[in-house]
Image (cartoon, rainbow over all chains, first blue to last red; front, side, top):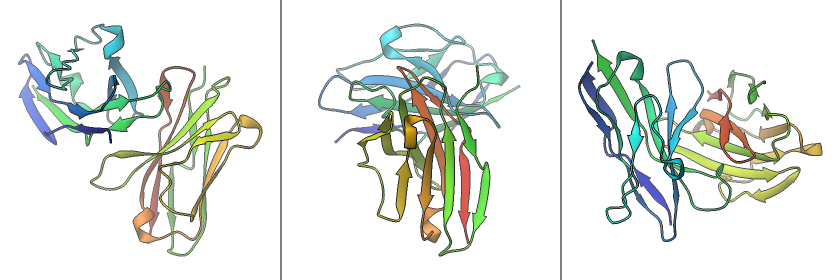
Length: 110
Length: 110
Protein backbone atom coordinates (compact mmCIF):
# COMPACT_ATOMS: atom_id res chain seq x y z
CA UNK A 1 0.00 0.00 0.00
CA UNK A 2 1.21 3.50 -0.69
CA UNK A 3 1.53 5.99 2.10
CA UNK A 4 2.81 9.54 2.57
CA UNK A 5 3.90 10.83 5.95
CA UNK A 6 4.46 14.44 6.92
CA UNK A 7 5.68 14.27 10.51
CA UNK A 8 5.13 17.94 11.36
CA UNK A 9 1.60 19.31 11.62
CA UNK A 10 2.89 22.79 12.41
CA UNK A 11 6.13 24.51 11.53
CA UNK A 12 7.04 28.04 12.52
CA UNK A 13 10.06 30.00 11.32
CA UNK A 14 11.10 33.63 11.14
CA UNK A 15 11.36 35.54 7.90
CA UNK A 16 14.72 34.95 6.26
CA UNK A 17 15.33 31.66 8.02
CA UNK A 18 15.72 28.39 6.14
CA UNK A 19 12.75 26.09 6.10
CA UNK A 20 12.42 22.38 5.48
CA UNK A 21 9.11 20.54 5.34
CA UNK A 22 9.59 16.83 5.68
CA UNK A 23 7.91 14.15 3.61
CA UNK A 24 8.48 10.42 3.61
CA UNK A 25 6.70 7.90 1.46
CA UNK A 26 6.25 4.21 1.02
CA UNK A 27 5.56 2.75 -2.39
CA UNK A 28 6.68 -0.45 -4.01
CA UNK A 29 7.23 0.92 -7.51
CA UNK A 30 8.55 4.17 -8.95
CA UNK A 31 6.36 6.96 -7.64
CA UNK A 32 5.79 10.47 -8.85
CA UNK A 33 6.06 12.91 -5.96
CA UNK A 34 4.45 16.32 -5.69
CA UNK A 35 4.15 19.23 -3.31
CA UNK A 36 0.82 21.04 -3.24
CA UNK A 37 0.17 24.30 -1.40
CA UNK A 38 -3.01 25.90 -0.15
CA UNK A 39 -2.78 29.58 0.76
CA UNK A 40 -5.41 31.13 2.97
CA UNK A 41 -8.81 31.23 1.21
CA UNK A 42 -7.34 29.83 -1.99
CA UNK A 43 -7.61 26.47 -3.66
CA UNK A 44 -5.07 23.69 -3.54
CA UNK A 45 -2.44 24.22 -6.21
CA UNK A 46 0.58 22.38 -7.45
CA UNK A 47 3.83 23.84 -6.19
CA UNK A 48 6.30 21.46 -7.76
CA UNK A 49 6.85 17.89 -8.82
CA UNK A 50 10.01 15.87 -8.65
CA UNK A 51 10.05 14.92 -12.30
CA UNK A 52 10.46 18.51 -13.42
CA UNK A 53 13.36 19.19 -11.05
CA UNK A 54 12.59 22.90 -10.99
CA UNK A 55 12.55 25.60 -8.35
CA UNK A 56 9.24 27.36 -7.78
CA UNK A 57 9.01 30.45 -5.57
CA UNK A 58 12.46 29.55 -4.26
CA UNK A 59 11.37 26.09 -3.15
CA UNK A 60 13.13 22.91 -4.19
CA UNK A 61 12.55 19.27 -3.39
CA UNK A 62 14.79 16.34 -4.14
CA UNK A 63 13.57 12.80 -4.36
CA UNK A 64 15.78 10.52 -2.26
CA UNK A 65 14.83 6.98 -3.14
CA UNK A 66 17.24 5.50 -0.61
CA UNK A 67 15.58 7.35 2.26
CA UNK A 68 12.16 7.39 0.53
CA UNK A 69 11.94 11.10 1.19
CA UNK A 70 10.90 14.20 -0.73
CA UNK A 71 11.58 17.07 1.62
CA UNK A 72 10.66 20.61 0.58
CA UNK A 73 13.28 23.27 1.20
CA UNK A 74 13.68 27.00 0.90
CA UNK A 75 16.83 28.83 2.03
CA UNK A 76 15.13 32.09 3.03
CA UNK A 77 11.48 31.93 4.05
CA UNK A 78 9.13 34.83 3.30
CA UNK A 79 5.93 35.81 5.08
CA UNK A 80 3.92 35.03 1.94
CA UNK A 81 5.09 31.41 2.19
CA UNK A 82 2.74 30.91 5.13
CA UNK A 83 0.29 28.24 4.00
CA UNK A 84 -0.69 24.59 4.27
CA UNK A 85 1.68 22.30 2.37
CA UNK A 86 0.80 18.80 1.26
CA UNK A 87 3.16 16.17 -0.02
CA UNK A 88 1.49 13.78 -2.46
CA UNK A 89 2.32 10.64 -4.37
CA UNK A 90 1.01 9.26 -7.61
CA UNK A 91 1.71 5.65 -8.37
CA UNK A 92 0.10 5.31 -11.76
CA UNK A 93 0.01 6.96 -15.12
CA UNK A 94 -2.63 9.42 -13.98
CA UNK A 95 -1.19 12.33 -12.05
CA UNK A 96 -4.59 13.07 -10.63
CA UNK A 97 -4.98 10.02 -8.43
CA UNK A 98 -2.96 11.16 -5.47
CA UNK A 99 -2.16 9.88 -2.02
CA UNK A 100 -1.72 12.85 0.28
CA UNK A 101 0.16 13.34 3.49
CA UNK A 102 -1.54 14.94 6.46
CA UNK A 103 -0.25 18.38 5.60
CA UNK A 104 2.04 20.84 7.36
CA UNK A 105 0.95 24.33 8.30
CA UNK A 106 3.89 26.65 7.77
CA UNK A 107 3.87 30.00 9.52
CA UNK A 108 6.56 32.53 8.70
CA UNK A 109 6.81 35.26 11.30
CA UNK A 110 8.03 38.77 10.46
CA UNK B 1 -9.42 30.12 -18.63
CA UNK B 2 -11.93 29.08 -15.96
CA UNK B 3 -10.64 26.72 -13.34
CA UNK B 4 -12.38 23.81 -11.68
CA UNK B 5 -15.60 25.05 -10.13
CA UNK B 6 -17.52 23.43 -7.31
CA UNK B 7 -21.03 24.12 -6.06
CA UNK B 8 -22.07 24.85 -3.40
CA UNK B 9 -19.14 26.23 -1.45
CA UNK B 10 -20.86 25.34 1.83
CA UNK B 11 -23.72 23.06 2.74
CA UNK B 12 -25.27 22.37 6.12
CA UNK B 13 -27.79 19.55 6.23
CA UNK B 14 -29.42 17.37 8.83
CA UNK B 15 -28.53 13.75 9.31
CA UNK B 16 -30.64 11.60 7.02
CA UNK B 17 -31.05 14.25 4.34
CA UNK B 18 -29.65 14.12 0.83
CA UNK B 19 -27.02 16.44 -0.57
CA UNK B 20 -25.69 16.73 -4.10
CA UNK B 21 -22.33 18.33 -4.80
CA UNK B 22 -21.39 19.48 -8.26
CA UNK B 23 -18.06 19.84 -10.00
CA UNK B 24 -17.40 21.56 -13.31
CA UNK B 25 -13.96 20.57 -14.58
CA UNK B 26 -11.68 22.57 -16.83
CA UNK B 27 -13.01 22.34 -20.36
CA UNK B 28 -11.34 19.54 -22.30
CA UNK B 29 -10.11 17.64 -19.25
CA UNK B 30 -11.09 14.01 -19.59
CA UNK B 31 -9.99 13.06 -16.07
CA UNK B 32 -12.09 14.10 -13.10
CA UNK B 33 -11.41 13.15 -9.50
CA UNK B 34 -13.24 13.47 -6.21
CA UNK B 35 -11.42 13.74 -2.89
CA UNK B 36 -12.51 14.27 0.69
CA UNK B 37 -10.83 15.68 3.77
CA UNK B 38 -12.50 14.73 7.01
CA UNK B 39 -11.62 16.87 10.03
CA UNK B 40 -8.16 16.07 11.31
CA UNK B 41 -7.42 13.58 8.58
CA UNK B 42 -5.59 13.69 5.29
CA UNK B 43 -7.16 14.36 1.91
CA UNK B 44 -8.35 11.01 0.57
CA UNK B 45 -9.13 9.89 -2.95
CA UNK B 46 -12.72 8.88 -3.60
CA UNK B 47 -12.99 8.14 -7.30
CA UNK B 48 -11.76 8.87 -10.80
CA UNK B 49 -13.72 9.41 -14.01
CA UNK B 50 -12.29 9.23 -17.49
CA UNK B 51 -14.85 11.08 -19.53
CA UNK B 52 -18.16 9.55 -18.41
CA UNK B 53 -16.72 6.24 -17.22
CA UNK B 54 -15.72 5.39 -13.67
CA UNK B 55 -12.09 4.40 -13.92
CA UNK B 56 -11.50 3.81 -10.23
CA UNK B 57 -13.97 4.08 -7.38
CA UNK B 58 -11.88 2.29 -4.80
CA UNK B 59 -12.02 5.20 -2.38
CA UNK B 60 -15.79 5.51 -2.14
CA UNK B 61 -16.63 4.92 1.53
CA UNK B 62 -19.95 3.12 1.12
CA UNK B 63 -23.06 2.85 -1.02
CA UNK B 64 -24.53 6.04 0.38
CA UNK B 65 -22.24 7.86 -2.02
CA UNK B 66 -23.11 8.00 -5.71
CA UNK B 67 -21.05 9.82 -8.31
CA UNK B 68 -22.07 10.50 -11.87
CA UNK B 69 -20.60 12.24 -14.86
CA UNK B 70 -23.22 12.10 -17.55
CA UNK B 71 -21.93 13.23 -20.93
CA UNK B 72 -18.40 13.42 -19.65
CA UNK B 73 -18.65 17.05 -18.60
CA UNK B 74 -19.65 18.06 -15.09
CA UNK B 75 -19.90 15.57 -12.26
CA UNK B 76 -22.17 15.21 -9.26
CA UNK B 77 -21.55 13.47 -5.97
CA UNK B 78 -24.69 12.60 -4.05
CA UNK B 79 -24.75 11.53 -0.44
CA UNK B 80 -27.98 9.81 0.57
CA UNK B 81 -28.73 9.59 3.42
CA UNK B 82 -26.07 11.79 4.97
CA UNK B 83 -24.47 10.76 8.26
CA UNK B 84 -22.54 12.84 10.78
CA UNK B 85 -19.22 11.29 9.74
CA UNK B 86 -19.72 12.54 6.18
CA UNK B 87 -18.87 16.05 7.32
CA UNK B 88 -15.74 17.41 5.72
CA UNK B 89 -14.44 19.21 2.68
CA UNK B 90 -15.05 17.58 -0.69
CA UNK B 91 -12.59 18.46 -3.43
CA UNK B 92 -12.85 17.93 -7.13
CA UNK B 93 -9.90 17.97 -9.51
CA UNK B 94 -9.53 17.63 -13.23
CA UNK B 95 -6.52 16.87 -15.37
CA UNK B 96 -5.07 16.05 -18.67
CA UNK B 97 -1.70 15.62 -17.00
CA UNK B 98 -1.37 17.93 -13.98
CA UNK B 99 -4.31 17.93 -11.59
CA UNK B 100 -6.12 21.23 -10.96
CA UNK B 101 -8.31 21.46 -7.90
CA UNK B 102 -11.55 23.21 -7.21
CA UNK B 103 -12.06 25.35 -4.14
CA UNK B 104 -13.90 22.56 -2.34
CA UNK B 105 -17.36 22.16 -0.82
CA UNK B 106 -17.53 22.22 2.95
CA UNK B 107 -20.25 19.80 4.03
CA UNK B 108 -21.56 19.86 7.57
CA UNK B 109 -24.01 17.22 8.69
CA UNK B 110 -25.79 18.07 11.94
